[in-house]
Image 1 (tube, rainbow, N blue to C red):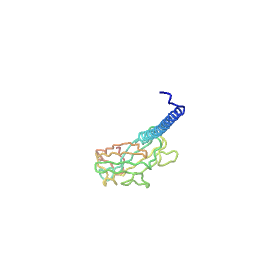
Image 2: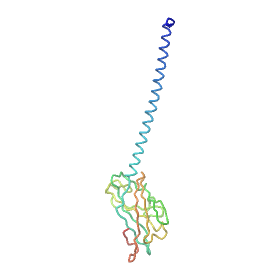
Image 3: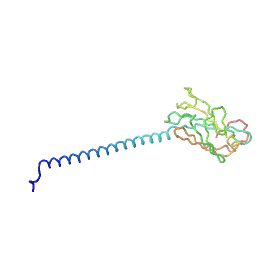
Image 4: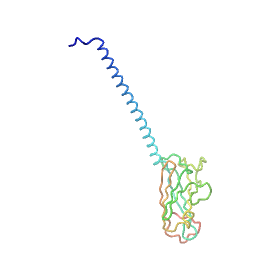
Length: 198
């Protein structure tokens, strides 16, 4: 029965096995390459998503205090907020920061004004403290800016006593600070241009 097997037959079986083995190694190498590339892509995506999430939480401003200015009659004509960097925040460019203004009658997104007067679509920025003369960019915990919102231009007649306004200050990286301001219940005895605490 085994007398029919020759040395030539044995060599052909060995070459066939070798070809199958090489093919398996190549398939395994290709599969490993795909897995490594996919893992690298997922890692890079996860790092980017993590960095963006951290920026949304940390890169924002903190509102230190607020006040309004009495207009003609029982109205608040504008609101002023003093802002600085929030703890742990990187630099925030106020030129690329927006403020969402939400009152009972209006919703407006305000951007930084290039002029000295706030308008119905822009807020005005003024320097309080800026040691390195980088006006417009909060890059130190010592920097302080005043942000003025012209409620008279937005509402048409300013804000009446007791009205409430929500301001959402959003930096370029998505960090958001929300402030809810309520106008004083009484403005009796206050003169036009006089500041009142909000």
